[in-house]
Image (tube, rainbow, N blue to C red):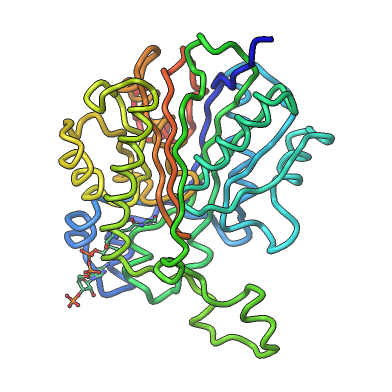
Amino acid sequence: MVTPAAVVCGIGGHVPERVVTNDELSSMLDTSDEWIRTRTGIRTRHVVEPGGSTGDLAVRASEAALRSCGRRAVDAVVLATSTPDRPCPATAPEVASRLGLNAAVAFDVAAVCAGFVYALATTSSMITSGIVDSALVVGADTFSTILAPTDRTTRAIFGDGAGALVLRKGQREERGVLGEFDLGSDGTGVDLITVPAGGSRQRSTGSAPDETETYFTMQGKPVFVEAVKRMSGSVTAVAARQGWGVADVDQFAVHQANARILAAMAENLGVPVERFARNIERVGNTVAASIPLALRDAVDGGSLSAGDRVVLSGFGGGLAWGSVGLVWPDLTPAESEENRAEGIPR
Ligand code: UT7
């Protein structure tokens, strides 16, 4: 019997309309456009309006992805997020219902900025083992809702957004087949990226948390070093398992955490930085949405085409990281509203 493969057949994304510029942040916090641009590469980020949610963004990205491949239905919705609409239940079932997919397999995957690759691995396994024939894999986060209002560092970096790929059952020889994965974690780094309160460890104390403990915190410097090390190693492992040299990879769709991380990885790997998909200037760090949004914008902008060898790689809280390789399929992305509004070419 021939083992089926999981094939990428659709792509879409969505960011909220509200744009926050570096100058706007500088009017509220002790920061500057110059610091943010030179230390991170970010110029703008998008944030949800009051009452908006991760699920709202996930629905919009999923609709765009389904539209891009002319599908109305899939068997599963797997949502990577660490800012669910509620602590319980998962957000994916409601997203599936809002898409009209009432009986779909639907659950969330929590691996922070590596979440999208973990969700791809899980979904790919469900397809190759015959549990489902098709799926939406969505990465969506609204970190603007968990940042401390006075934290100039995290507020400069993070933005909200969602990105989605549609997967279908196919053959191993096709373009778009999800190939080799590399996944890993190191829980000794749990405190480097964390929201200390709100989980069982704090709630079991029976005391209300200090307000500061309810916000996201990150120790930027060690996280930067780990991000470069782990993603460089993971990308190299995937390229080798695919039977490629790192220099053979046409496009690296790497988590958009900091433009300097992309530059350091390019130097480490000995490849031109131009091969790294890059939309951090416009959307900042969108956590689980980062990789699919970078892919969508690379396709929209013409730097990623059918037949290109691509490696996706994510790293973040956990610590957790993951990468996957594929030969990019022939996709027509549904034109994104914000790209059209901002005059970014398809
Ligand atoms: O998505 C998950 C994975 N996340 C990452 O990979 C993020 C990795 N880390 C980073 O990208 C960087 O470490 C940051 C962008 C978070 C910070 O950049 P940095 O160059 O490592 O700065 P730093 O934290 O060492 O801070 C340097 C200085 C400090 O001032 P002093 O102590 O030298 O006086 C900070 O207080 O810059 C200051 N600073 C700022 N100044 C103006 C920090 N944030 C800001 C800001 N505006 N927004």
